[in-house]
Image (cartoon, rainbow, N blue to C red; front, side):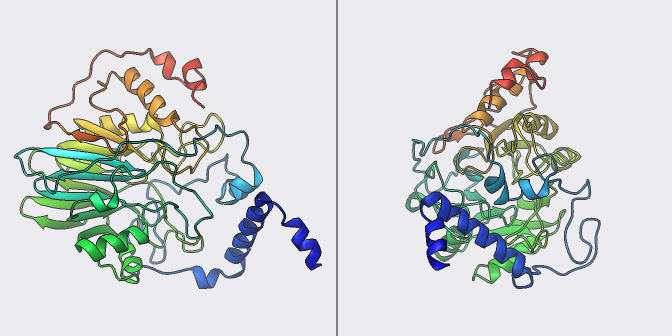
Amino acid sequence: MARLLIGTLKGSGTALLFLIIAFCLVLTIAPPFLDVRYYAGPVSGHYDGDRFANPDGAIQPPGGGDRLRSGSPMRWLLGPGARPEWPQSVAIGTDRPPARVTAPGAMRAVWVGHATMLVQTQGLNILTDPIWSDYATPFPPVGPKRVMKPGIDFAALPRIDLILISHNHYDHLDLPTLKRLWARDRPLIVTGLGNDSLLRANGIAAQARDWGGIVPVRPGVSVHVTRSHHWSTRWGTDRSRALWSSFVVTLPGGNIFFAGDTGAGDMEWPAEAARLGPVRLAILPIGSFRFQPGEMAIDAHIGPREAVQAFEGLGATTAIPIHWGTFRLSYEGWDTPPRMLDLFRRCAGIPRRAFAPVRAGQAVDVPPYAAPVRGRPEASPAQCRDGSPELNALK
């Protein structure tokens, strides 16, 4: 029997398959040991006293509703299909940000990769969903591996004052990175309910709020925890035990909106965020939206089309797209999200300077807030319709 087992494990592909099956068995056999209750509090419209939920409807699994085939890691095991190739690595520039940006009205932003953005303004250094790890997984080196290095070397990162953590998935709440930042800088960390328990268990302090909650930073600057359409888990069985959120940082001269990770839902969340004041900079996800050929979005992740709609709903002056090209989490090609964003932007008549992809490590001087301007569409509506040759060419 032992010889038979050894024989079946020959080859790295078979070994990886065995590891995935073993991991799935662990999740099946020992759920009581993996289900952690991160939060207990009063019942609300999105918390039943046990788990959180989206008030605009439960998250539906990708892949046509087949829960087994679409689940992770089972979607890779049972039906990866003919996915577009991704590069093994991506060459980028690396920024060396200043210690502070203190010039009146100035705002400097650098996309580090995935959902990590460094924004420097008003003498504050703000970091979103920081991840400098090479893997977004509980068991490296098994799981999604980074193909694009961080756009800022960790050693070159200035002292961080404020960190926003949208939810507890491994590609957004990266404990190795957060431990380093906490030990070095002791920043103010703001997150949704329950995530503070996970951080505290790892020696990291955080301020957790429900949707609608506010954390003052200093006079004139506050963090508002706002609604998104997503879900949370670290181990599968602890699904929706902690809250997922977006954020508005209110600032003199215009706010910052960080969407975190979100699906479209009822698409009311951009307008809700906009009611907190004019949005100078919107940080919006555009990737990990396709889990089968031709898909334009999934319930948990907006694609470029919905990102353009969110940008318009926010009434933002400038947006920078995130959540693409760093970790392979879905089926679309490496550069499909930014190419598709460019198409939908042109169909909406949005100037390229207002919402366009940037390279990781590329510093952006965010212009002052101004009411959004829309020009004549540069592409016909037919080009942006499902099934169009332009969209079909973007795998």
